Image (cartoon, rainbow, N blue to C red; front, side, top):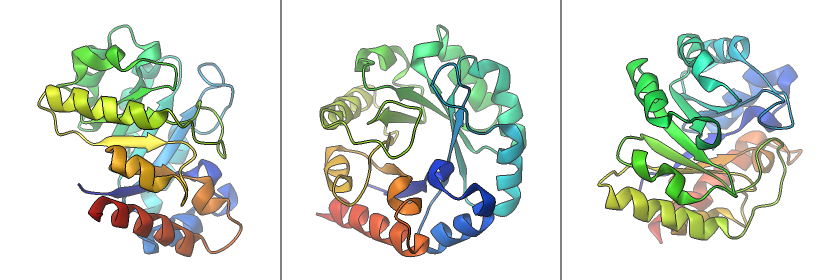
Length: 224
């Protein structure tokens, strides 16, 4: 199991993104998680292509771009051109999910699908062999700082079983409510990519130390 920490800039100080990204990089971040929200699919508006382009200049880490938008197909190429290394899209808004996954890969990025808390695992059964990763939302998407939904553990286990059955070693990413009290549980359930926002940027202290603490806790859990 290869643990990868993906700090979410949704909880960072937008006036000092470069500084915060440097801090989490020193703290052991493996990729930067970028939440793109349109105010339609989720009840919040965040950032778009120009910010991703600026982030690309600020870090050499992979940019893990999570498209929480109603029509992701329109913007795939723009985000990859801006520097996204990974694009994850929501199964809930894509009637032609296989086509979207194929297009993301053709553009040269890793393709991920996302499951909201109320979306059943069976929704990705037909593309389980095709995805590069699966993102399990352990909160309802839209806002940072939410409380982890406990039954997400069973969902992570179910997604791992589905991927294994499909012969796909793709990692599971988990986003929502991850901190030092929940990280161990999700790792034991099968998560390898861990998105943490408020636990790193919202603690009001040393961002580098907070990132290192989360990463160390996850790595220890994977080795247990």
